[in-house]
Length: 414
Image 1 (cartoon, one colour):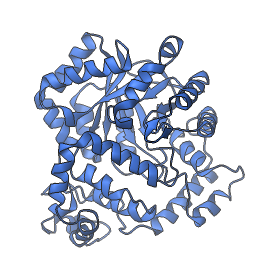
Image 2 (cartoon, rainbow, N blue to C red):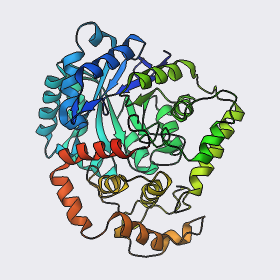
Image 3 (cartoon, helix red, strand yellow):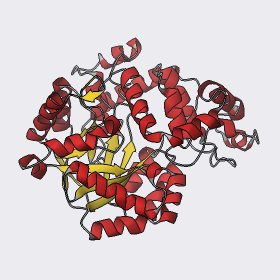
Image 4 (cartoon, rainbow, N blue to C red):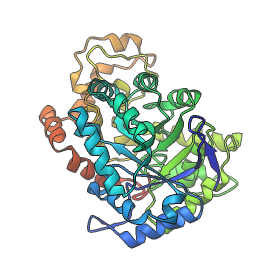
């Protein structure tokens, strides 16, 4: 297993990390013995980073890791978890949440502590409460070693948050179909320039890039001299980037662990050939042919005067059609409804001012298209759905993750 060094912390992190969001389950409960074997096997073969969060497996993921990561195995890994901003109303909540996480994980200090799913709105709210002071205090008290943030917003918001605190690491969604979405390549390079560790979530786009790929895409992969699975190709693309520290994969079978270990052990930065990179471009064209909106996520339409995340709305809308993603309405509710970020940015906010139309290089009829997005992904009573989701966000998050898992093309990897 290759290791990659984080400039700011000096720590060597395995190129593959174990994401504890999609552990093997039976009757909605973690199959503890099977999950333990898979995690131990990964650690024994060089994985030294384990990532979890409060809502994973209905709150059971942290406790499970606390049970199994002790003694020699605790010494071999860095443990990462996240603070849920949606549960924070006042400063004291952050300290209470952290103490409970330490208790569940059965440790005195969390190696990497991320603020979960930050966006511009949620960070501004947390900063008013005192999140920077909280992180510094937690470091001083040795409750956490390093601080980071996971992110689901646009490139502009990413840079603002990256500059707002002396972060040690960030966690972003990145795969060959999301090169320009959310933080995107530009955000990743910016974080790397600041010395942050860069942890990648959704390298397989929720399993969509690894499951039943379109026949045209499968034929393109078959043109390669070396035959690989779609999951292998997707992981290779991410690991090929020298800025990437660690790719987090939600593995829940021995076969997936073995395949991902093999890939992470082979792929060095900038090792893909020009012929292989051409295959990715051809596969991307297949998926682009299935899109509903020819949006390139260039961002010229932003910022929207009323706060609509135009590229984000089109990204989820396109995903619904590219991958027949039945969980798209849930993803849309969580992200565009501001359930976690606190910043509503859904298509239904559009007032048809025309500013975006004048600046769009693709000459898209953006207000009309946003109307289509709103009709399909919001429906009636969207504001009430958002309000309800915010009031029960913890169980909703677990349902959302379970539905993504169930309906994804590959039901077991990120």
